[in-house]
Amino acid sequence: MTLSVSVIVITYARPQFVRTCLEHLGRLDSAPHEIIVVDASPDDRTKKLMADEFPHVTLLRNDLGPGTMPESRQIGFAAATGDIVAFIDDDAYVDPDWLDELRKPYADPAVVGVGGRASNGIEGEETKGLGEIGRLLPDGRLTGNFGANPGRVIEVDHLLGANMSFRRSALEAIGGIRGNYPGTCLCEESDISLRLKRAGGTLVFQPAALVRHVAAPYTSGGKRFDRRYLYYARRNHIVLLARVYGWRHPLVRRYVWSTIRAQSDYVWEMLVRFGPRMADGSRRPLVRRITSPVILTRAVAELTGLVAGFPAGWIARRRDRAMGVS
Amino acid sequence: MRVSAYILVGDPNHLRESVASYYDHVDRIVLSYDETRTSWTGTPLPVDECLATIRELDRDGKCVDVPGRFARLDENPLDNDTFQRQNALDAASDGADWVIQLDTDEVMLDPAQFFASLRRADTTGTSGMHYPARWLYSRVAPGRYLEGSTRFWRPAASYPGPLAVRAGTRLRQARQADVPLYRVDLRPWNTDPFHPKKTVVHEVIRPESAVLHYSWVRDHDTIRRKFGWSGHTHDYSRPVVYRRWASRQRHPVRTVLLNPLRRRDWYRLVDVDESKADAS
Image (tube, rainbow over all chains, first blue to last red; front, side, top):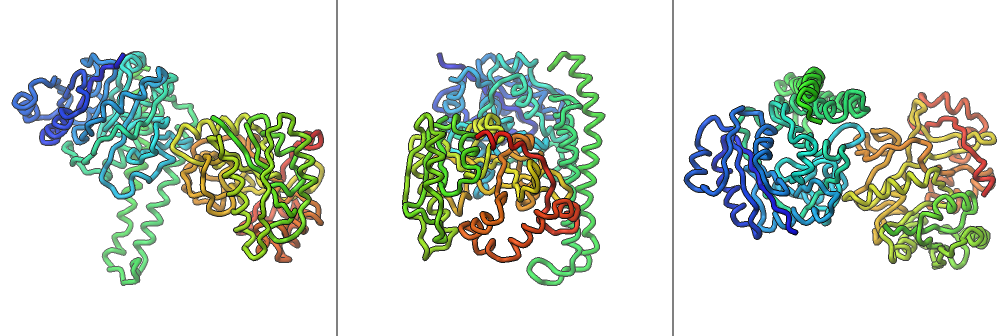
């Protein structure tokens, strides 16, 4: 029996990307069971686009606004009726065989989640980090490298939010998708994967299920990898580990130590920038040397995020308990 | 998962203990040796003594002889090392998914853990497994050894090369291969002083589950000969290497206490259960 697939696209104020995304979904070799768009935009541009050009696609509304990607996912998941729920970002454009390739690993009943590859158009990404695709490392960090192509289906610990799918029954069994990963929403997708893995499921990476990820600009404020991003990366990571594994798990304290160790990079970079010579041997301007300590504000952002993760994790765990979500 | 192994036959020290530690877990073991019983540097090797030992423990007929000519005296010893290993690895790859490449002075303390890690490596995108070896420098008393460590006496892993590689792997030098590696270590962060600090660790095991590498655990005569036949003979044959080894063996406590003052070569004193070695 062929498993039916509901495709869920979550979006925030990027109708031009939603259009291209849906056009690609319309060109799939095998049509999905349904397509659901969950819109959290503050305006009605996406709503108008859907009514004008994609009336056959289900549009749902998330009124919580920016920074609520997992909440959007949960809204889509609650409405989905397929055996498999597949999530793709609005700036991720599928290849025609994406759905067929994504579905193949589900032939193994132990598989509860399948993630696909995201081509970001970066030179060398196919071979970079081949040994570290989607891992939760013993030091508490998560690796990405979802642009790498190992050439075969491999097991992973977590999946990329831009291109991931889950068996609906497995997701229901763990209580659905949890919210409370604010800001840049980092780690929200890993929460789903790690919980499923902890529940005994197998997650795999299927490189043949490809999306072209164009990395659209943030429309909810800030830029990729700015200080706000760094803050939420550390904060949400602590929240993630505490919620999935509990405070006493070694991963939490190892991650704290990993974060502190990582800050030495900024110190070194500051010292290098303070030096009188550039890498090419030319003289470094005095202003550049004097302002070299600015780089340390990135360390401040990361460490502040790390500390903020503890009360945030405590609150999130309390909410999880109150809602009965594992 | 089908697993083979190859061994380079020529060093009887710890041979029985080494092969016995993983014999039950592999399908086939390729025995590679030079037809003329000569080392990469032209010195004689006790190949027949080693083969006799292996025949004794090969109760299931897993061992396959693959002799060749590896003592190419006009070549660099390290190139001969790589040449012989590649020859053995190619032979062991036939019908296998993974090939173990353990030297005969390396003993798996916990084969169940080793093969569990290998199964995990098999499910990832990696093509080789870096499994930690605890490097024993010298035996200073019965059951008491100097072991390579961090500067402040914590256990340190050493990686002479991936101890398992996917069948068909091309070796770059000795056991080294330019393939994505599944890294097992003794802590969540790299413990090998010779590897970059940021090396990614995939899995952590206890030191008791590592491979024990009786690298320089030899008597004085044998260690001198080992320095002569080793692929690293250019470095090891310098007189200072032997002098240091002998001095540290004589003064193990002083050697350990002076760790913080040395830039490298750090040791700790450890107890090793020798009952298995005696029994085998």
